[in-house]
Amino acid sequence: MRSATGIDGVLLVDKAQGMTSHDVVAITRRALDTKKVGHCGTLDPLATGLLILTLGRGTKIQDLIMSEDKEYVGTMRLGETTDSQDADGVVRETKLVPNFSRAEIEASFEKFKGDFYQMPPMVSAIKKDGVPLYKLARQGKEVEREPRFVRVYASEINEVRLPDVDFRVVCSKGFYVRTFAHDIGADLGCGAHLRSLRRTKSGRFSVDGAVTVAELKSLPREQIAARILSLPEVSRLRGA
Image (cartoon, helix red, strand yellow):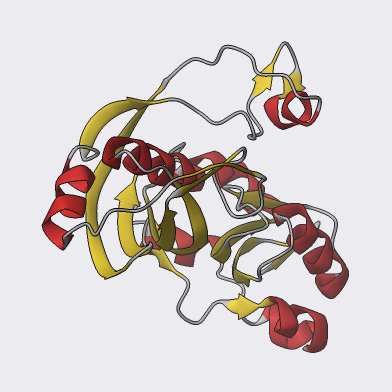
């Protein structure tokens, strides 16, 4: 939808691996020739999947969309911990992975369901005295962090391929899936890190049918604009 100030609404993008959420925003600005673009919920460069972009007046409901629950599918690798808790980090420790049964791993997953406090990783965008933690981490510093109250609504193991475990998790805003993998590895006693991650849903929005980054770079502006959800459409989808 277009207003006097430009394009308004929400665009669902399937983020590619190896780029930041800000990279996707920049590509979208160029593709649609508009400046007012925001994103709802950062995805790490490692992660792929649903990135919700708000355009024009849509930026006013950004906080509402960001507050909704998320669904992810991912793979954790047991036996290796990294300084970032994911595959982009430096391996800190390697341990032998016992021949865990599926039931043993499921028992560990069960400990991280419902409401609990999660310690944010050092490699994160959370700020300490105005400085993002990831910048302090790059300097080799580790500072005290406040645990965050989070919720896991559901989780399941899709496949066990030791040392890898494929899983799905539905969680609240502010939940770190790489910390989830790290903590399950710690509980199992062998350590773990997040090997891959894909966001599949956020609230009522799904990655199915989302615009790919390749399409953002190649499709004509009019075709991309036609994929934008108007603000009334977004309101109906959210059940507002």
